[in-house]
Structures are given as C-alpha cells and as structure tokens.
Length: 143
Image 1 (cartoon, rainbow, N blue to C red):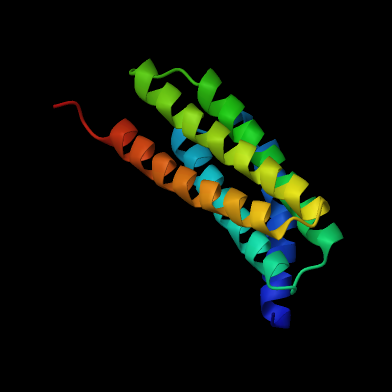
Image 2: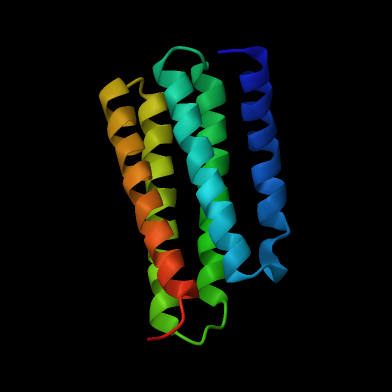
C-alpha cells in the first residue's frame, strides 16, 4: 500500500470521530453521507488488512472508530424529526446494519479470521446498497 493510501486511511480514522462529534446539529442527509463514507472507509481498511498491508492493531482501531461513528450517525438519524418516519427508520436500520458489520469485521480482525473479515466486508457492501436505497427513498418526493 502506498504512503499516500496509508495517510488517507489515517486521515479517515482521525476525521470520522470528529465528524461524528459535530453531528448533533446535522441533518439526516449529512448523517447518511457520513455513514456512507465511514462504511467505505471500513471496507478499505478491511481490504488493507486482508492484503497484509495494514497491521492488526491499526485495522482493529480504525474499524472500532468507524463502528462508533456509524453508531452515532444511527442515533442522530433515529432522533431526527421526519415527515415520513418509516423512511427515516429504514435509513436508521441500514446505518445500524453497517455498524454491526464494522463491529464484526473488527472482531474478526482481532481474532485473525480472514474468512470472517471477508464475510463482514460483504455485509458492509450489502448494507451500503441498503443505505443508498433507503436514502434515495427518503429524498424522493411522494408519488
């Protein structure tokens, strides 16, 4: 992995908690975008660990940070007032699924279980799709 990629991963790990700490006044839109970027960062860290390019302690710490960011984003989405609570709840469920997958990836990294990291990564990708769908449904006008 190049030094630029390492710096990018390190920057993501530092920025994710800072963005989450500012989230109390953020909108569902911003929290959804934060969740999407945190989930993508978790996929990248998992890839780096699986390829041997990221040490276990770094990957574990980064995944824990991303899971925490996802937890906070989920809480913010759940507590936001919405004109359509069912659409908001679908978004919150997708964010929760992302958080759970990041936590599973962290645990698997710590246990050096490559197959389980791969499975958690697949869950992250599937939940990213769920988040994208829920977000599109949330922002689309009623028909």
